Length: 159
View 1 (cartoon, rainbow, N blue to C red):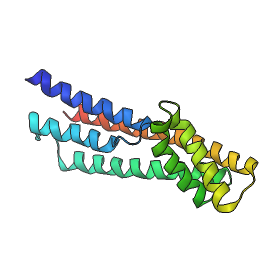
View 2: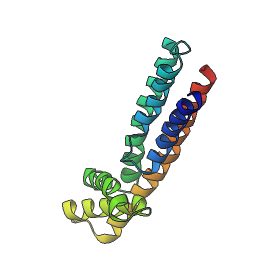
View 3: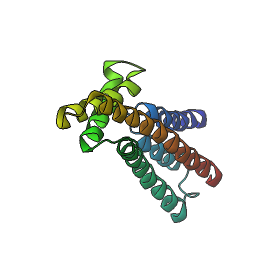
View 4: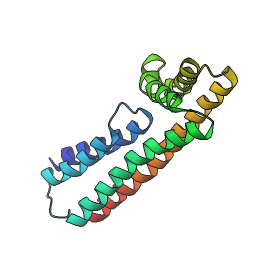
């Protein structure tokens, strides 16, 4: 049974990293779920209050990094709240409409549409905001990926 338990834990960890590029998958839930399942399957004994405090801080950092990267990417390229909302909607819809590449095209087109529809921004400026949205998304993936790697390393170090 130990192999089955470890397989489930590892699958949840892998799914948390898949969630970096498919934001519809709740990365944080899978990662924290893997920690909790370890406790259920084996023991909660290695998990002190320090472990949970550090992991909760990392979870907060993950949410903050996701929001800030998109915000900074769009704002730095001249976007407004409309571009941010459009980018976010495109990020959620894009992968379903255009599998695989939709994860980049969705936020790009969403930011362009948000800026163009709400502010009647010229196309060149709207495209610039769309590029900022993609830059923000890519930097978010790398930042969150780094944080998740640290969380997993800390998990294995503790157990």
